[in-house]
Image (tube, rainbow, N blue to C red; front, side, top):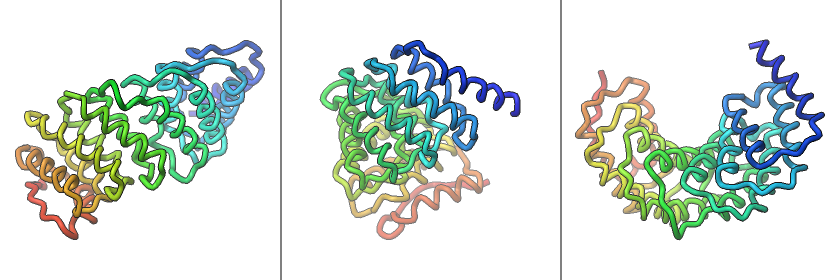
Length: 291
């Protein structure tokens, strides 16, 4: 909408000429407000650049809430844009300088904010490294929504990245302590987020193992058709030679066979697309019905 673009363009000048310091809360709020703005807009890119410059000049320590809010606000952005990469670099520095550990909400918000980013971005790798250092895998746990959102944010990232594997290992430790009953949409989000990950990595297999336990113990939750298609689509990089993958597929098969949900043709297509690697060596007994 032209009016919104005009407003954003006007804000750029105000941010650039602001001579007052921003505290941690103001930084988190400013970036959180970007959450529905897309970086394919020139006005939005200019605003992101202006905020990045402003934030980089601030001598503040960000806490869990501020870190989560700041990174969450980037979830409609793409790391293809240099202004977004500048923001990632600035946030990586701020988070590295923080002494605060991320709580469950902070982990979920921060990782969710990365779902539009790509693995081949060095600024993103720096940010992932900084976030990993703020996650303590030895304590705390995640609830159902936090599990779904945290894993959803990994969807554009490759497990060939050491930083992603470190985060996956710490998330696995969190899930191991979690008693969460996963809701249908959170199962779908969690597995959809694993679409670019490979079970070749022991850290990813550990994460799959703990996620499977949570799915199995959520036995009274009936999966929707959307959750089914998202879950199976997310398996596209998983090889059936690993028992962790086999156990996950068995858990999903039980849930799918017990649901009355019917897949639309589009959902059926996504589901079957996700089985492209599994189909080489695993027999799936899933009751999929198409109207």
